[in-house]
Image (cartoon, rainbow, N blue to C red; front, top):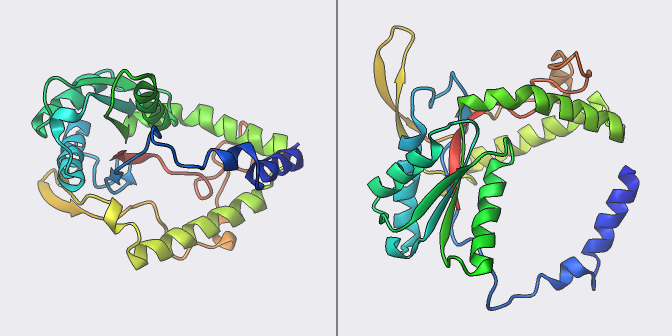
Length: 258
């Protein structure tokens, strides 16, 4: 089945295919004109463990307004992709107002677990396509409550590995390569123009609050090798033996706007 799917993808990318055809530019194309994000930190123990999502949203929106040069009055809607915060819609609206966007713009939150951000972006695109709005902002914000979705995603990971015959060794090798690429990119500064530095307040082990400047992703592990990853125990032994804390994505605090 995996071979068949790869063959299908290759056909789609071939000259004359439907996907190639839609690459042509049209006057009514819906485009992402700006994309910014915070650094991505470790949930519950990283640099954003004591920062509220409304604060991170406010900082991102202010910077987005500055960098894009957009007239705030033109923005008609905000879509907020978030996992399990019942007040997410209120928080993004408060952040948008504080950042200088008018109260004429709507705001709502959508939760589809790990694909919440994609759903928010798709919703804004669909609203533009239908003519309901002309300009919107989609936001991705994962916070500590994403922990609630870990077990189902771990189960999914093990099911996919079993269905497609993906081995632990293959997963470790791919994860090591991903870490190594990310490490090189971070050291070369390739992420810098998309990351908005965030001043965050964090409580230390003695209960004292201090202000720090967060500029880098925390999840990149320098020096990662597949041999090192092979020593990490399985994270979901109740479902399988392939997914580990080394070859799977971390639980993350942070967000992005587009």
